[in-house]
Amino acid sequence: VQLQASGGGLVQPGGSLRLSCAASGNILSINVMGWYRQAPGAQRGLVARITSGGSTNYAESVKGRFTISRENAKNTVYLEMNSLKPEDTAVYYCNADLKTYGSTWWMPYWGQGTQVTVSS
Figure 1 (cartoon, rainbow, N blue to C red):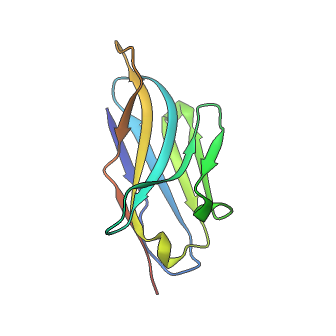
Figure 2 (figure 1 turned 180 degrees about the horizontal axis):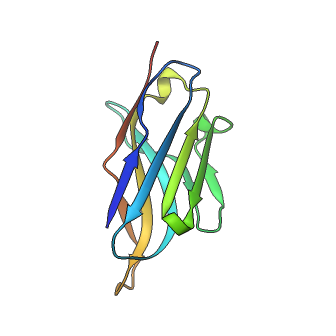
């Protein structure tokens, strides 16, 4: 199983970016998909998550600015980030709780991370 994230980059304060993460491989079903971020010297923390039914949760710091969505048929999750601030600068990681064929358990998988830098 692989999670391939893309869409990071350098953006000015107030700008926007859209992150994508596609899961591929021997996947039977995906439950929750989400985005986490880790700034230098800080712990990795939740940004947003979305269930297979579309229920969402957001970190307080991004509410009203970020929107998470997913395409179940494509095993893909997106993060639309607007009104970006310098404090949003971090490596963003996608995550998926999924079952592979032949497995009984839900297991967490992580993407490789994509850098988002908000700076003028």
